[in-house]
Length: 282
Length: 313
Image (cartoon, rainbow over all chains, first blue to last red; front, side, top):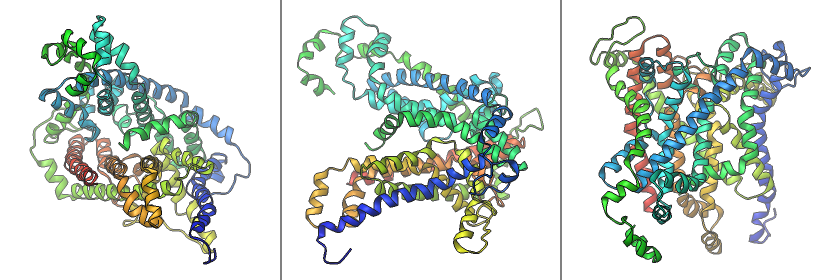
C-alpha cells in the first residue's frame, strides 16, 4: 500500500490479509493435528511407530477401524456410554426443571439458601474418592445406576442455575390462566412451564451431553472397568497401546469415538453454537 | 414483581378474585415445595454426602490394606505437607490454572477478532475451531503426545524448517512442560472462548463504533477503550470457566505426561487418581479435600472481582 492512499483504503489490506490469516490459522493450528490423526490411523504398525506427518505408503484405514472396533470393544462401549448418558441427562433435566420452577417462584430466606446450595455444585468440585465409598455402601459401585447418580449430582446444579434464571423471565400470568381452569400444580408445570423451557433445556442438554460423553475421570473412579464407556476403553487401548507404540490403533479409536458427537455437531452446529453463547454474555 | 402484575391490567381483576396475590398459603399450594424433593435427594445423596464424607475420611487411615478405619487426626495432612507433595500439587494446579486462563483467553480473543466478520471463510473457520471442544480431552491429550514426542511430528516440521535435526523433548522438561500442557489444554477449549467473545462483540451497538470511527479512533484505540471494556461479561465467563475447568483438570495431563516429569505437572486430580489406584484412599481423600477448599477459597473471590469490574462500566 502506498502512502498516498485515502484513509478509507486503510481497510483494504485487511481484506486480503484476513481470509489468508483465517485459513492459515486453521491449517496450522487444526490441520496439522488432524492430519496427524488421519494419516497415522491409515498406517500399518511399523510406519506408525514414530507418528509423523508423512502419508502412509498404503492406506489401511478400514482394516485399522475394524481391528480397533473389535479389540477396543467399541460396540459395548458405545452402548455403555449411551446407557449412562441418556438417563443421566433426562433425569437431570426433569428433576432440575421441576426444582427450578419452585425455586424461581417461591421467595423467602429458606428458598434463597436452598437455591445457593443447589447451584454450589457449578463451582465446587465433586468429592470423587468418597463418592466411591458411598456407592460401595449402597451397593452401586461399578454399576450404571451409580454412575448415573454421580453425574446427576454433578450436573443438577448447572441445570438449576440455567433454568431458574429462565423461569423468572416467564410471566406468572401464564400459569394463573391454567390455574383458574382448575389445573393442578404438576399439570401447570408439565403443560405450561416445561414446553416454554425448550431453548434453555436444549442448551443444558448440549453442554451436559458433551461433558458426560467425554468424561473419563469420574468414570475411572466409579466404574473402574466394570462397565465399558468410549473414553474408558480409549484409556485402556491407549495405556496398552502406548507401551506397544500402536499409534495407528489409538488414532483409529479416536476417530471412531469422536464421530457420533462430530456428526451431531455438524448437523446442528448453528443451534448448538447459538445455544451455548446465548447464556454466557448476559 | 407486584408493579408488573398491576400493570397487566386485565389480570388485576383475576388476581383479586383468585386466591393468589400475596397470600402465603396460595403460593405454597401453587408451587409446592414438595417438587424440590426429588432433585434435593439426588443432590444430597450424590453430592453433599460425599462432600461431608470428604471432611471425615481425610482424618482417617482408610486404605485398601486393612479392613477397619481408624481416626488419625491431621496425620495425612502432616505427611503430605512434610513430603512436599501437598505444596507441590497445590503449586502445580495453581500455575496450570493461571496459565490456562491466560492462554485460553488470549487465543480465544485473538481468534474472535480474526474471525469476527460474517464471511463464508470465517464461518467455516469458526466451526473448525469448535471441533476440539467437542472432542474428548483424553483424545486431544494423546494426539499431542504423538505430536510432541522427541521423534514426533512437531520436531519433524521444525527440522525441515530449520534444516537441522530438532529433538526437543517438549513433554520431558521439568520447567517448561507445564506451559506446553497448558497450551494443549487451551488449544482444546479456545474454540469455546472464541464463540463467547464473538457473541460478546456482537452485542456492541454499531452506533457506538460508528461514533468512534467518525472521531478518527484507530482500530487499536477502538478496541482498547470501547470494545474490550464492553465485552467484560464474556471475559468474566471465560476466565471463570477456564480457571474452574483447569483446576479440575485431569484428562489432558494424564494423556500427555501422567504428571511427569518428576511430578512437575502433577495436578491435584492426577495425584488423587494415582494414590487411589495405589489403595491409599485416605491420602487421596485428603487431597480431594484440599482441592475442594482451594476451589472454594479461590472461585468465589475471583468471580466477585470480575463481576465488580463489570459493574464499574
